[in-house]
Image (tube, rainbow, N blue to C red; front, side, top):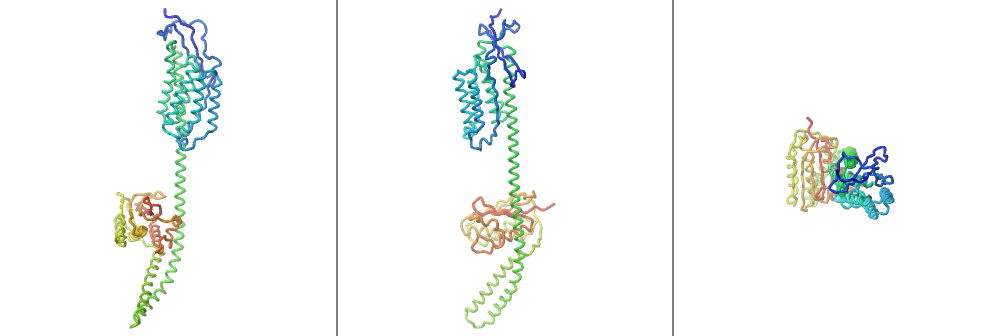
Length: 489
C-alpha cells in the first residue's frame, strides 16, 4: 500500500464574475512523504469532503484595463488623471479584503499604486526601457503578492493580478513580445508549483485547471494586443489622412497664389503694353532730334556734344527698358521642340559667368539621369534660366558663395510628370515680406534694377504650363524651383 493520504485542499475558481459561467476545482492531496508526489489515481478518494482554502469569503478580482496609445504616451506630458484615481481605488479595495493583516500584501499593493501613478512619467522619461521596467516590475510584484495572500501560494485567490503585467505588455509591445512576456508571467505564477509539490501531489483536474489559467493569460494578452494594434492602425490612418489634408491645403493655397499672380500679371501686362507703345513714339522723336542736333552743332562747345550724347544714350536705355516691357506684355509665340535641358542649363551658366568675370562663386551641378523628355522653346527656356542664374550672382554680390544647379524628375500638384530645375545660392535670401510678390513686375529687393527679370521668368514658365516657386535654400540663400511638364505621348 502506498502512503496514507490526508484530507485534500480544494480551491474553487469562478471566471467571468459568475460561478455558473465557469467552475473548476484545483485540488492538491497531501501525502505523508515528500517523495510520493502524484499518488495512485486509481485509489479511492479520502473520506470526508474537501476542505476549501479561503472558500466563500475569497476576494474576486475584477480588473478593468484601459489601453493607451504608445505614441500619445511618448508625446504628451504625463499628468495625474482620473484613470489613476480609479487604479488607486481598485488597489484600495484589494487592500481591505482578506488577508487584511498581512503587511507584505499591503506593501505590495502600495508598490503597485506607486508604479501606476508614475508609470507614464517613467515611460516618457525612458520610452523603451520604461516599458520594459514597467512590465518586469508588475510581474515581480504580482509574484510577490501571491506569496503573501494564501497558505498555498499557487492557490491564492489573487492570481488574476498576473493579468496586469500581461495586459501591460499587450499595450506596449507587438504580438511576439506580448507572448514572450505572457510566458514569463506564466512561469512566475507556476514557480509556486515547485514548493507546493514538496507537500502535495498534482491531480489531473488540478493540472487541467492550472493549464486553463495559463491559457487565459495568453488569451487576454492576445485579445488586448489585437485591440491595441487595431487602435494604433486607426490612429496612423487618421494621422495619414490629416497629413494628406494638410498637404492638399498647402497645394490649394499655392494654386490660389499662382492664380492671383497670373491675374495680376495679365492686368499689368496690358497696362505695360499700352504705356510702352505710347512712350516709344516720343522717345523716337527725342532720339532723332538729339542725333540731328549733334550733327548740326558744328564747332560748338564740347559740352553741347556731350549733352547730346547723354540724351541719345539715355533714350537707348529707355528703349531697352520698353522692349523688356513689351517682351513681358506680348503673348509668347512658342517654337517648341525636344530639348536637352542639361545643355541649356550649361549654356545659361556660362553666359552668366561671362557677365561676372572673377566672381568668387563655385558652381555645383547636380543633374539626374533618365530625365523625362521635355518639349519647349529653347530660346525662352535659356532666357529664363539665364535670368535666374544672373539673379543668383547678383544676390551673392561679389562675396564667396556657391551656386547650385540641379535637374531631377518631379511630379506637379496634379500628378503630371516632368522635370524640376532648381537654382539656389548662398546669398542673403529674399525678405519674407517680398516672397508673395517677388514674381510681380517692378518688385525687387535690389537697390538697382527694374524688377522685371523674375516676372519675365514667371511668364515664360506659365507659357510652358509649368510652375515656379521660391523657397529658402539649404545653404541659407534663395532657391527657385521651376517645374516643366514632360512631353505628352
